[in-house]
Length: 391
Image (cartoon, rainbow, N blue to C red; front, side, top):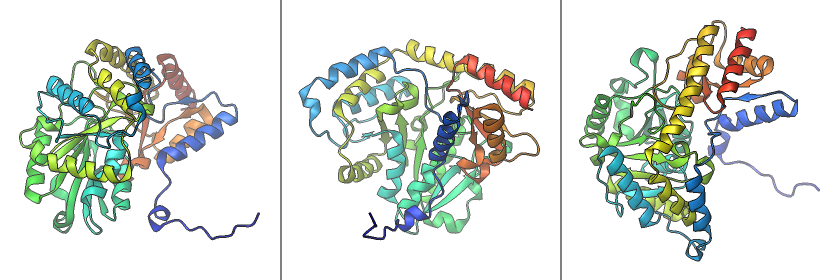
């Protein structure tokens, strides 16, 4: 059958680079089809099941007829109240559930919609790089200009806010930053958050903190919330997700909270383009947010054991890295003579290990590779042995 129309993608799609994780998924499928015993430590998708009590809550919620109808795009007030209570308990931050919290269909949706709510064509958006690819992609879709702030080891993987050109600052409406950081695993001190508040006030821009990994930490080193910082709620919002904390990536549930006008703007975008998260998922989310910390402690201990196993192997191979205090990633230097892409290709083709090239997170990630701690300890040790044989 011959085509009857000529299909042409919109400019915003034609200008996109290949989406990093879609490309990784393609390579993974090719390797598995070829019969490779693949150790996949590429995508940050927890292999640990969602805790049983959350699954049980979901089973009961699905049977409630009131959850079978259209939800509110802003989220159930009971879910938003649970978010506020979690913030009070975890960070000693007070939030009004009605005006300072909005439910998200995963934090990715919130990241993508923030520029749609606040960025006009020609406006600039700052974002930390290497970083989550959706920061610049959401900016592009809104007609804005993304301006990456490089994260370097020399600066503790914190951005140099004083390096932004004045011409860019005049046009900046939004600043995305993310700690504990994906992909570098760096944590930010409270002093940095204080600097961000002053920076946002001085340049009249929205500070948007992506805190998806705040609950994956080791040795009791609990990361702070940006909203704990004095003045933070007057200049910005914090995005969070239940995906990593509770192993609920497929459930697609998160939230944004903070400045009521910013939360309201995000909610207005959502009311026009989505119909909200399934209410049964939100009810299960309430259960998740009320989870006792001993459950989360067990999850963290699992990741820490994996971290330590892979770290020991990397040391033996001679690969340089900083041992992370948070997230479930190890951000490592590639060996001399390799680029990020060439080393990932070598590991895949010669060792059956699927990792993520650092340059896929932005130009500042070149020379690095990201390992996700999303495989059991024995597979982490096996990956290290394979690298030892290869290198």
